[in-house]
Length: 157
Image (cartoon, rainbow, N blue to C red):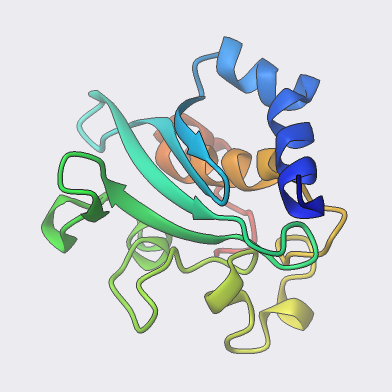
């Protein structure tokens, strides 16, 4: 087993990860290293419960941030732009289609290296001491409108 796979397995076995599963904030859809597919619960702008799926590419983890895409399991490809989460400008920005087609967040492999986010948002930037639950908590916070309202001052990003 590679060090990256060992680290990913440890994160998936951690108490913090399991608490999120028990709270139904996220669930593992499939895992075959280096690909991890996770579903994250949320609330649509109209108040309806929802779930969005994300594909994590974990090569080099945790020294290298995961590449994370919003995913269509049935099509085994990126989720179409018209099916992505709607809501606040923060939500739209995070899930917009862009160059590398990954989630647009400071912790993500491609977008984190973009636009000097490490200095601008150190509390959201990836570093090797971060874990998968850190990412899942951020995704859930974006998708769960109750959390978004409670954390609306969260750097605006």
